[in-house]
Length: 330
Image (cartoon, rainbow, N blue to C red; front, side, top):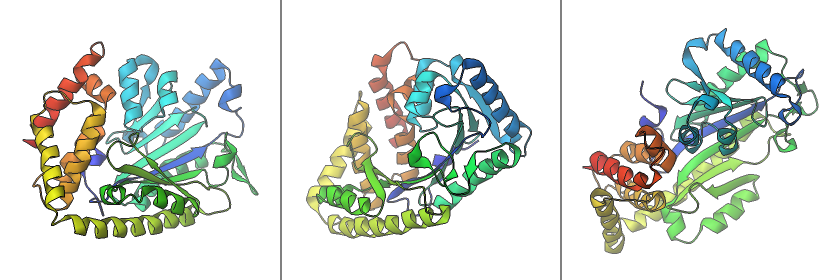
């Protein structure tokens, strides 16, 4: 089955993907920090059973990370299907067949639903997450208070328990030196803008910070409105780059390195693919954005090693990565 990140999406010259996360808990079960091993095990079984006995039964597999290798667990975290902490704990989670949705069972909250959609498609990602959420809410005693909303392990998630995120590629804004100013501006609107890859390349995640006192629709609408403004700003600045020989030279050098390198560390790859993705968006290169996004999603160290059965040879990751890129971009 084709993975969700192979489909492009609206405004994907600037937006890589949209992501929805919902946090839920059971009213009759202690939070994870107060759970015994047996209670946690039984809670996981109960949560899995509610999905297995629902209309979603054929859409999800149960992944028990205690039976997976360390590097495979890391790979799931790299793809944002589980949190890094959950990967270390080797918990169990539900994963959809095309990887557009996952449900961590007994992470910080009993239920952590994550859903993805390519491009600016928050409504699509929300529809996926909401369908899963409905199964739990209708079949289990989910903790809810008329005044506080959904009850969560962390007070910051009280209310809707919703986090909306949009992954943005902003090379023009970064080059213009405006990222810090943009982050400050969205911060005043109750949003955050942070680097996706430790400031390598120009990839950023725009997210809401407030989940209480605001409806799910309002939170999604706010993100969409701000994302639309950022998209316009990025495109306007990119227009200035189109006739720049200096930028054209830089982008071609990056593409040449990706196509010819025999070893590439992940950080260097992210920087180079950021340039190449810009070149594709500007019409300079014939490669597709879908190919670039496939590489971004699948070439972190853990994923490369897990996919090539090289867990015990981490030094091979740069070599394998370079070979994959050469084959994809030839």
